[in-house]
Image (cartoon, rainbow, N blue to C red; front, side):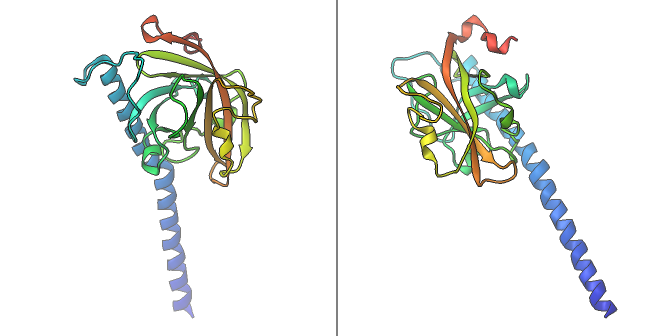
Length: 223
């Protein structure tokens, strides 16, 4: 009997150790790797935008180049989430892509264009980019740049809770926030609850202002 009890105790200790190690991996190591990956993506963008990468500096064109799957094309700033909060935006929402930053839903509008520019991000793990998503409020600024232009969006509604199958939230004209006609909209999505994925949290915004990067940072980032 003592042998059985001792064996069960050892198994429990081993299982507990494995669980602690796994939680540590999820909470810490994926975050470390994600932060490094996101910084790498932003470094690539800054190098491209400054011409240091050997590629031509981006310019505003009548027919801009398409977004490449899995590649970064913009940086997002959300002052409500912290003065130092800024993340790369990559094309696509696949698992590998969302480990390196925020993901632009394929098929939704390009940044700043008419339609709905929709972006997803992890709430927890892989850098926790949208950990504080519930703090977002109407009137908050969401600022993005593609290296040539600053785009300042203003949140109109959210956080709104729905289910993953509610794909209408990224329609070109989302109805829940009250939009009735085509415009230049932004939708942000993340998982809910904080450590689950049974639901989604959504915020919607409209394009409030644009300005060339050469004129300096927009007012929303200078407050």
